[in-house]
Image 1 (tube, rainbow, N blue to C red):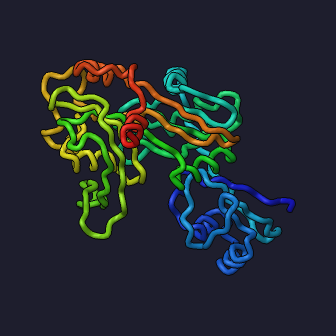
Image 2: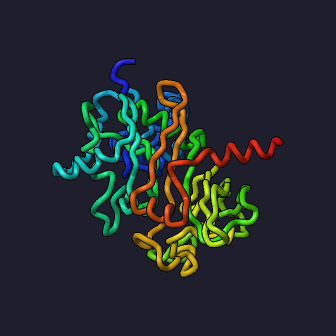
Image 3: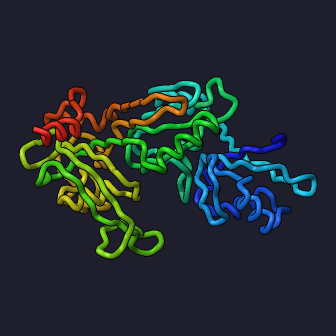
Length: 333
């Protein structure tokens, strides 16, 4: 059909209802008309049918049929940030892989993914520096906490954004994290299934395990190496995507992540270590289906500061196998 539009959900629209998304973009379009378009399948979200109550996600593609001259669309807002040559060099130095559809970067610790209250420096503000030969800035399809370093995927076009966003949403992406924790978990490998909910008041909120019917949170863990009973190097795989899930779950094990004062208190710190007293949690690898086909895996090395801590305890982060594969192999013997 001619004049069909395919519009991409932006970061500031993430989580809003589909009918409200239409109200933003097509204020002259009545609610009844929107309902009819949804009911007859003329409107699609990532190629599938949707309801007016459907919550849209950043990167999703919304198919919009022609409405006629009576309905005027508001132009989609595009964000642009003025970057210095130093900014461009900084963000391009993070790239570990690039093709026509995706970019994989190694996000440094301390860099927020998006802006917010009192956050002026963030990855979203640097994305214009990753356009390279493309006409549009890459799109965020998932997030990492500000203090968590490691591998992140970016989509270079709406097609890739739609595919990758759907893959993250349906848990078809395998994410493996590394963490140094204080103490050694017992058992040394297994699965944590502990529901997590948000507690506290605005401005002082934290995630916590709940015995009530909270959202399910499941993580696999495996110990790669230990330094006596003092510190363990863990591989972690979240099977769900709750806020601060791995940090809370390491607390459940009785082994808080090194440097995680928010969830481990003073027990999360060890005196005399090299480098800053920061969270030692790193998104090591991501395995996924490329939007054009084929399975891919990308890895990110530790930052220099974190590598110093690994080596302080006698760990060599350049020589390690797949702790989960070894765990599965041992289970079959």
